Length: 140
Ligand SMILES: CC(C)(COP(=O)(O)OP(=O)(O)OC[C@H]1O[C@@H](n2cnc3c(N)ncnc32)[C@H](O)[C@@H]1OP(=O)(O)O)[C@@H](O)C(=O)NCCC(=O)NCCS
Image (cartoon, rainbow, N blue to C red; front, side, top):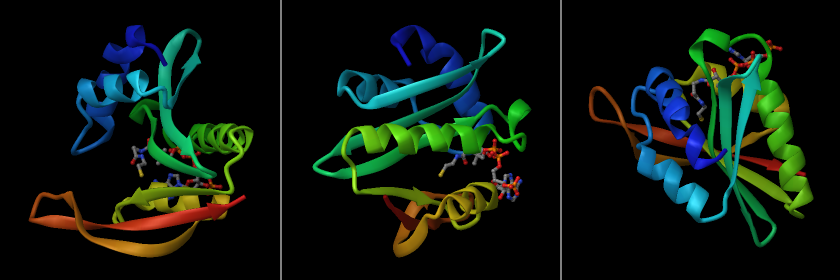
């Protein structure tokens, strides 16, 4: 991912999430040197991911497939690539947070071997109040 991708990334981000990141969030990740990736299909940007790896730990900060391309195996490919990248950074464990109501993401992470290890109460904004985050970990 580069600065030049951010308009397309934001178009997908707004379509895919009820509470999307801002462009500033992506810019901060690029400037901080996080591992930021885009996937293209026939020249069209259709998925992206953000990983931060440090001190043997990886954290998935974003993982998103354009709604037009969901349910076709691309999320799995995106996460497989992210896990390989984390391995390349010498990571032992990868962590992420997910809304328990996000069944597509939850099932994907469980299939990849992530396990729920903690709950962060009221972590996410939600339509009615707040929603907890399930913290998941994959040991490599
Ligand atoms: C979560 C997300 C990345 C999954 O990507 P995807 O390309 O749709 O998923 P895949 O087609 O690769 O499916 C992989 C597995 O996820 C699960 N899955 C996918 N869509 C699902 C759905 N609608 N309901 C339940 N499980 C689902 C299945 O277990 C599937 O494996 P299977 O096909 O062998 O049964 C995608 O839905 C997305 O971008 N959502 C919006 C952004 C988001 O919520 N990101 C995660 C934030 S924590």
